[in-house]
Length: 514
Image (cartoon, rainbow, N blue to C red; front, side, top):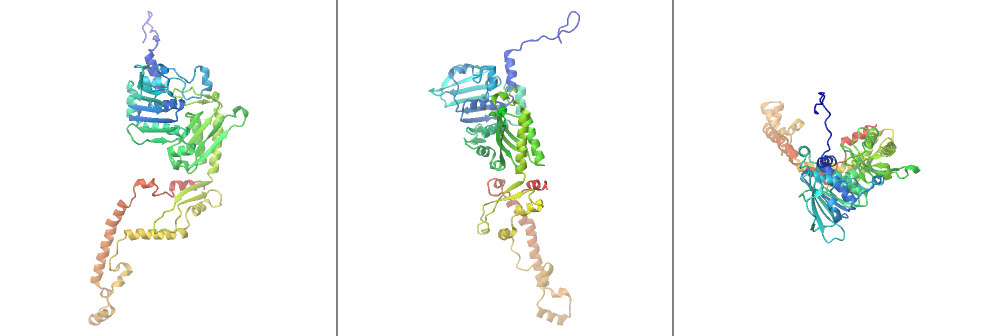
């Protein structure tokens, strides 16, 4: 409420200028929204510095420690005093430079923001220097003069106690899931795109890195290193560009998953002019193509690199540079959507299943082939379902001996030896009839003709007891033991010991189009 005027009407509240420290902290909270945002900004700085190796260490999801080291060109000694001031940058000098900006950073807010919400220490050395310098920053300024120190090529930025002065933000992040998976995801995406840079990411104090990608010349090798061979196996190369003179520089290339790929959520790695960004409209268009082309399909894997003239990209529309705006965006999205749809329609005529023959030494010598690939062609014959079964399943006559010997070996290993006496159940009871000569003497003496007198009751009782004991052992000892001890460890499903040859989920996708 404002102060009342002489007439009794409340006056509007006064407008005051916020203190600079408050302004800076508010801005910092927008730029560094969470630890993963800080990691992304630091990695982009490393890439702008021409690094060929970037190493990240994280403690407590980034709240306690974020450490990013690179082998880039380093920071000049004379630039250290203003390094963490707001709007200090080496990326541009005039607003017009934004029209042709090619670096990932340009505002000069990332490092400054980190010093307003955390404790930042920078260690750096430039080429030709005999030693490096270490300096700590707080609220955008140096806490003391840079100190000479031993250093390796490049720069190391250490951010400690992130959000120490933002109680609500820190409490929210501590109560939420660890931010470390988001950090790993960011670095994985950078590793796929920047294939000439080595990336690693690990938890502080851990010996094993959760992300480790070596420099390579192959995009598929980078994807395989980060996301695994099973993903690469189901990818299709995609490429498109405009042919008209006005947009001759528009190019898109990448990889998309085919009909064999199975995942519960979409993985979309999008770089525009080497900048990791999101594009909601493009993502929705791609998801729509997959759902329309592959009914009940799983979520796709997409890697896409788009290159446009810098003046066609507005990079200054989001505080964290997470999104960009494109000139002729609708046309670009439509072109990409049509290209993906065409690729999927062509690849959807064939499903490929990876199978591996089992090799039992001395048992299944007939089958020495290590890998088989069976293709199931869809829509190429009048009866797709019968064709699928005929082509997918192996020929029984060729495999029968293998299955018979394997089954016999397993059966002999686990079978209980039957009692010496024959099984008396059913028709086997005739085996317990008395000797015919003995029976003739008994008939002559007792003149009895009942069936019971034809059976050796004592021997029969002994056999029934033995076989009853066998059945009890099978039910209560053998099968429970098999269920408990014959189950292989889960690690065998991924280390190559066992190979999945089929799954109902994938087979259903074949038949759903029939």
